[in-house]
Length: 550
Ligand code: GLU
Picture 1 (cartoon, protein in one colour):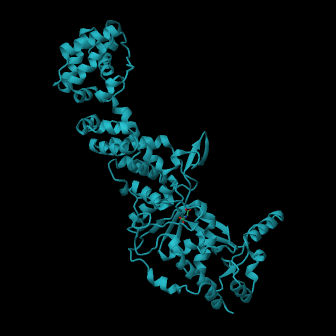
Picture 2 (cartoon, rainbow, N blue to C red):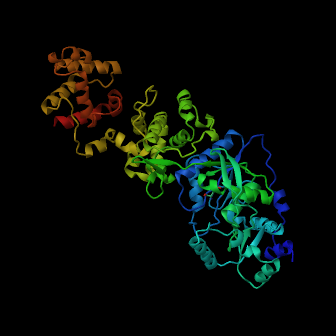
């Protein structure tokens, strides 16, 4: 019995690997083009750290005119959930991070290097496993899970490094005949890699983000094909990223310590190794302690959170780039209007130990992003959000013409656009007082300020409405009218005047306009009062003032 005969016995129908090598040729791309991927498992949960990886990977491929693809790693069938692929595909779509190749729905894919779902690549892995066996680089292992458990206990008790390696690799020592006999007798088995590595030797590796790292060589005979015929991550990664012609593996740094094994697999398979960039996890400051964003503790760890509260995708992406490269902030300052695609991301400038995610900063970024949207974009986006999450807001927005005017306050043509919206969830609270049916429906707690004597307030409002209010006034005249009103009641026309001789006046023009503001909106803190009054119109203004005069 030789290796080839053993291989034929195990995988009689597997194709020769030359078939796949030809089927998936080198990609015809320009020099320096980065081919990379996002390769999540469909567990039903997309972590913001995953989106961060996808954003970075996609950006680098775009910057170099390369390819970004989505590969679904579903070989651990225990962890899978229904519609897990759609969850990933839709999350990428929600953030405008569609792949060039790979899965595009639960079952459909695009691109010439597929299938892009590992569970449909079984035959391919088997061909390469067969090749390894033929080369004497892999072998069948007949140890049962119970034997594995026993081995673990023995090693633990003896305080020996755990694993299936060296003298502990029992099946490695079987003769080819013994192996063949066990297979023929129907014994279940898995396929293990036959490692030539030595624990006492070191391997040096240069990671694009982590820099130079040194690890002991891998000497573990790791499983490459499991009992269900599917590969482990390690083996699938090597085969897939070779055949999909990936140039850069951009992934979470939990895999950094597997690099010795992965490089060894690439070498033993005869593949050229890709470059690796291991991204540190996104961290959170939790009462002074830096820890990973946790799926269990932090709602913002889930990508779905951002959609739910309505933080625009532009803001999330902008913020993630901000934490990816510290140079982004300066770039943004110098290029206020530029599209984030114009920012040149540098992998080697990413944080080695984990960037800090700060929700308050993200919301600040989001306020700026939304302040740059025109009214129709704010309208469309908040309507889309409301249709899914807030029926009351959806109803308010039904009157499109009026809503556009409301949302246009301090926005359209304003050189200092309002920055009071960080997420679509904030819209209702910010505009609800502008809608008569809402305003008159509720009992309002007026937030009167300096002047809070109701009978004086009524007097002032009476005179304003009867003598000064002019619905057609331009802003200058409007303000002048309020100044006249102020003077009539013994308030200074200008704040300056008041400050010079505070005893001479009851207050100043600002106190008077505040009365009008509070009367019309119920609040003392609102956007520009002149614009608000233009949008409300005279009927609503009179009604609102009458409500106080009653
Ligand atoms: N499926 C692996 C994971 O989700 C992918 C790692 C990789 O990108 O290679 O961790």
